[in-house]
Amino acid sequence: SFWEASLPVLRDAVEAALMPTINAMAATGIIFLPGMMTGQILGGQAPFAASGYQIMIYFAIGTSSCLTAILMSLLVSSGVYDIKQENEMVAADKTIPVQ
Image (tube, rainbow, N blue to C red; front, side):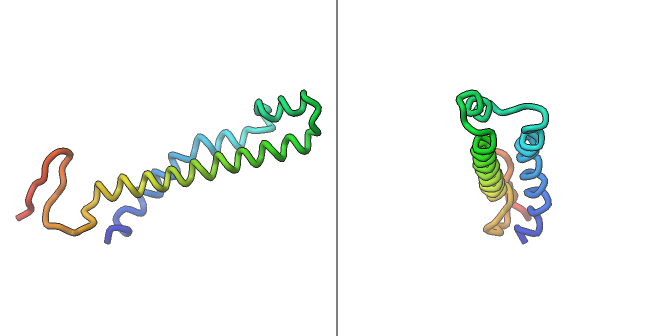
């Protein structure tokens, strides 16, 4: 079926799309302090509250990245695979009937 054929490829695509976001989250606080958090601390906000806001922002970025990667992978794969199970192969710009 479509899902059995496309699941390994979709999994790899989503993993590759999320890797930069996950790496940026892993380095936060250890290697660098994000701009929003630094600005809040310099502006007089408590570091605990500033880090809470920064964590919330990173969760929002991670969630939107994940949803975008999944949605785009599904949309692209539906154009690549023959979901309607017609008897033709779809090339980049032309249709080739299968005999």
